[in-house]
Image 1 (cartoon, rainbow, N blue to C red):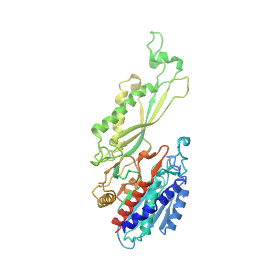
Image 2 (image 1 turned 135 degrees about the vertical axis):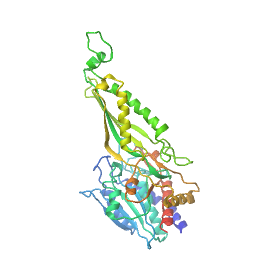
Image 3 (image 1 turned 90 degrees about the vertical axis):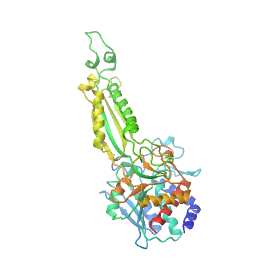
Image 4 (image 1 turned 180 degrees about the vertical axis):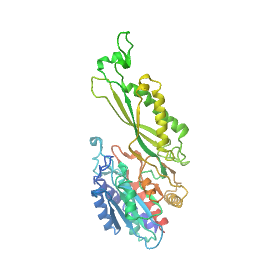
Length: 437
């Protein structure tokens, strides 16, 4: 039976690529902030597609305007076996610098064994692979005891998976499953946990003055001429020691204090394509200055922190605030005008953790090895995803899918290899047959 399933996927490789191309062409752009996406066009397409496959469908929108629908396609089992859930999100990050793309971002162009376009790798490839795994099972006449539940969810890119997306949709639909696979691109490595994410902001105050007076600000003057902070203060110059301290702290965390055995240091003796050292303090936005002819009177620096999910936000905030205060204590201006730390801002996103020794992980390992002949790499996701919100619904989850960050994810020229799509669909199908009996 497995041979028939795999043969179907090999013979329908081009059809699978065209399906991914088709859904890449459906815009579902998310600006990364709340309520900035409308997934209805994608939802309508998938609902009709799943109905034509003969799947039981459920469309669940928990927002007031019902413009954030989540789509379930359920391949019903004939017995009382275990259910399995597959998830991938419909929304994508925005398109930036469209002229820099080799092919138009929403073209879904299929060239050289790749499907190109925004969302091709994050995360519409997951939708394509899980959908064709079920199509292959249907074509081969596979009867299962448990249900296969496909969930195309809303709002992942803006961390709305716990608001409008996967988590509340599962709860609202009354979905029950004993294991879940989230189809984000992991290079077919099995991620059993992820980092957590939070954002914070450092505000450094200076004193704005006409730029022609900078000489008095930075050079000593005769006793009768005002100088230094009496005249003005360059906020960016005052911020630099704090910026350098946070770079040093990032290195210290990774070398000494925050080395997770799974996410931070690599969870396998085999190669981990996402690399080691996951705890980062990333400056992601810097603003300052109000006029070209003036000193910068204030600098605001936003940071994202990716950290071990066993470390609380309160612990991180305490350490950041303490060390910024320590730097400020060395400067006469900053002692009197201490930097402000706002944490958290924008959003926080708790990571997930699933025991690597549970049956679902072991069966997925065996499905991978049977197909590839290689031992599966068990590691952790250096980013965040909807596995957090699926786990919160009591469904143990892992992240496992084709492709990875190097496929232009969140950048230009995003793509997905067609061969990796086929391989993922085969492993998904094999996992289904083992899990649902």
